[in-house]
Length: 480
Image (cartoon, rainbow, N blue to C red; front, top):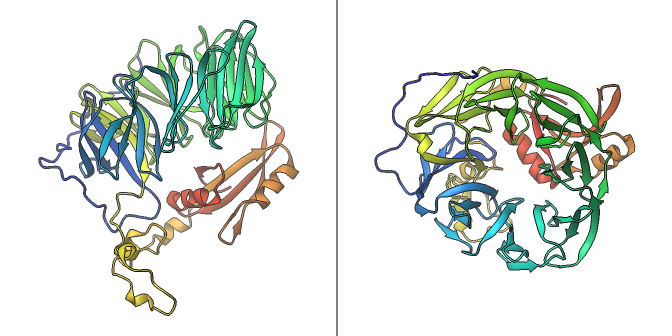
């Protein structure tokens, strides 16, 4: 039996009189703040806590529908899109301070790429989109089975035919099909986090679909039917569980073949990927635990006792892993699996970790008249720099020069097999006075050309650079 029990005493996590909103400290570092949303599983008050200080409430709203599944977080609008306990789409608005249900119509296959636009399949087989601009609807010629919204605003629709499956590509609000791909009958489908590849399992075959060109990749034959799929955020590796097998098979995206396997000695019933690609969590069948796999080396860290729900376990931005044990929630260290924090009664809530700057104190200068040239900097309202994520840190916050000497954090934009394509992409990525560069790495005898920026002293700085590049990216710890 794979399990790990632990006992850690700490005081309760809920203050008696929680404020509606508490500004984060002016000493908050640059970059988005680590936060956790918690809503009672039966619905009710929604609270946002500062992570890892899970006894600090920074925002609350009196009433929110019971959550069942998070669809995405729109950091520009300050809204979380989710599916409530009745299967209806809902939004929680941090700026307006309330939750709303978008429709009471019966919908299935609710998805969102970034929490902004929500897509679903209606009872009549029509595809619907709910967005700030209004509702969009399209009735496909065949009944749709699954939807895959893309980062560029397009939409992939999977439907079944007599001879197999078909994937259409549209660009809402247009209802014209701009491209399509015909495939064998699909049993499993997985979209990579960066959105440039769709992986499809058809019986014993795994096939990739390049979402921009709708071209199929080489099919990979497995020994038994495919049951589970998971991919790293960049999509460079796909993890496959097949029927009756106790291993997780590793498929390399660039070589388009299986390159290894992680033996677990028990069949896996569920896979869950760390959004930052550091860990893969696997639930062995018949056991209330999670096997933690470090993806940098594909080695098994160990197992930790936890119930499996839509929200828990999850990997937090700092590498902690939140697990449910009885009525409580623990946060354990991802490398040692030792407990860091115990939240008494936390399992009664639905949890969602996210990162945002919107709960910081509002800069007073934002509410002042526009400043024109010639006005000295001393005329600005005191405290402005503490509230702006892109401003210099206040003097009371000293930088750790010893941390600067560490390898830091690297922003990676792509890993390609063709040097010319990598150099062309790198020349197009500029952040400030920096231009991306190409570095080479060897994997199983092949040369990989990686497009990167960095390293940077902190993850927050690397994340900022990635966002400002306006390209798909992922951040990892260490030098290029």
